[in-house]
Image (cartoon, rainbow, N blue to C red; front, side):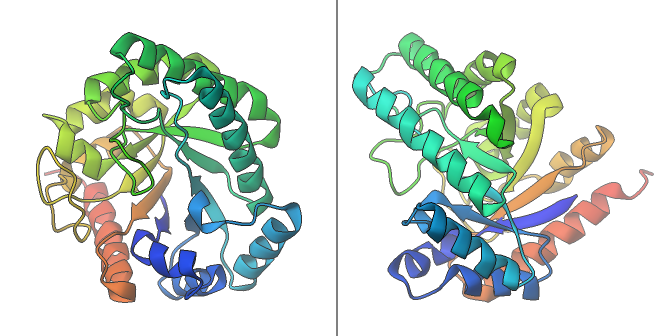
Length: 278
């Protein structure tokens, strides 16, 4: 297992320019991460020169980027907008490649009131499949997430319901799209998070290690302090021989101390899951 972190708690500071990507990388190195993650929202200048400069600044701190999270809206009811979403996401994947990342987190899109279930599934599968096929040459693995609602969206994720997530996941499998399994979202919306994991475990490339205080509505809390059944989830992954990236989604708004606590908790929980049973 390798460990990285998406600094959700620091999004406002990074977006406003109060914290640089280099400073986030330095914190990651200080806390013993193997890499850092970025949201595409943290890369406002997507020109090749700016992306190359960001990569140099991060690598100068002894860090690298493993995942770029993104928010494609392939369930938009307007066909022209879905084409624009594809073009925007192709740009995101190119930026991720320029940053040296290996993964891009993708979503279905928003639960637009005008979008029905069948057409939403079909549009999401089509958009994600076309994205995978058109960006394969860049060497990036797309990882589809059981997602909820980012601050950038008006509506929740179309596939917040685990049944819808699984339907889209099956549809994009032939295109080689992997899974980014979000532990906090699973604990919030699935009746049995481990059973949900079991249905996609052979395709899980990465985990978003997050936590929620409530069922039915995502409410981020310190990783390890919420509902997520980390021992059961990690034991299942260990038994399956899984050895990928755990990407902490740190959203406790407790500063560096919150990131440090999350790193410590995940490493200890993973170590405990590897202990022989009995």
